[in-house]
Image 1: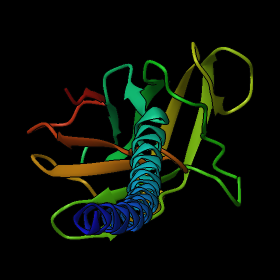
Image 2: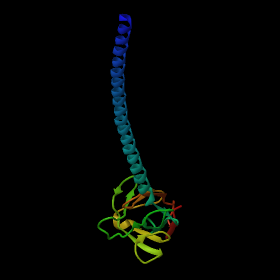
Image 3: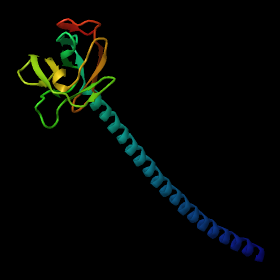
Image 4: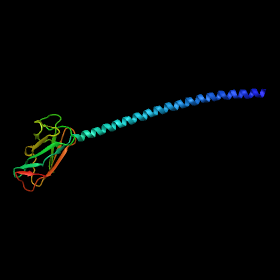
Length: 194
């Protein structure tokens, strides 16, 4: 009988240890689950933050390209026989582009035209914008055509024969348009600079 009592007391002791061990194991598993949940939250919020930054970068890139203009005609240079006096060209919006302010009298949010050749840089030329099609304002909108005329002699740019020059048309938003042309070996009154 004493052997039986010893076996029963041993079984009772093992049952108690197994219950405590099971409770400890459950606590450890719950701790792992909590740590994994916190880690998953951190990873997901970091991923969402970085994808939001990526989306902002894409939209900023689209905004840079959406306001672009395109050349819609030849670049015409008028001459006095020795130098180019004025340069004329027509612009339209690129497909899907946003409106561009071409008002030369605007003090803010205006388009700036720069002149560059091998001897000088003029950062802001005086120009006129004349609507050809569309409404009568100088805001270039989809479907409109505006002629830009630049008086180069008044700006101090003397362009002779066989000379390369560059015009940079920089709208307030979007990418700018670069026109690089070379003057002919002999001037006519009107010269097509293609």
